[in-house]
Image (cartoon, rainbow, N blue to C red):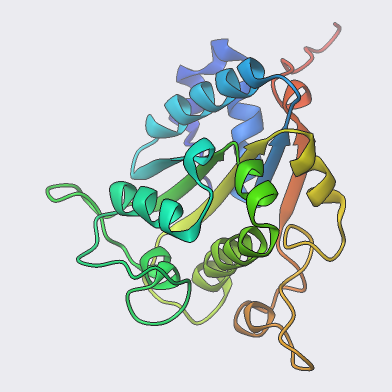
Length: 220
């Protein structure tokens, strides 16, 4: 799966780091962190503009600074992906998982081939409700894996970019966290591992400053 088209590579070539960084979304989800709010905001703004310019791609920005509860998250998801009804739950009919699995799009627009979720200030929910944050991450990465490798048929290819402060980095280092493992299902195999065949979510974690570093030229 190629998130970044070759035509876009050429159009944005002068912006250095963007095509190379976003091309990592071809195979992985990304976690990016920085202590500087302005640096994170600049990163999110440029990445969102770049992704929105891709053909057949939805770039969905979740404003994490306003997400403290599942209800807060659902309000934002309803704004980004139109659905008849979204119940305030992760699983079950009309829940978050069902929304993520769907091909819903704005009336008059073609269903996207790729949907990229950009979750800015994702550490706000991690700080306010770590258990809910882990469950939401597991859901988002699980639906992506199911769509690409498992039994789900017809949904868009999905990638998630999580952006936040140092707390997000600490979570990314936690081997039991949902950036590095599927949520446990008691004594059974994790559900998302069963439906996708993936041992763990494909996630790469990097500092924002490293991701925004222009690629080195030959001979430089």
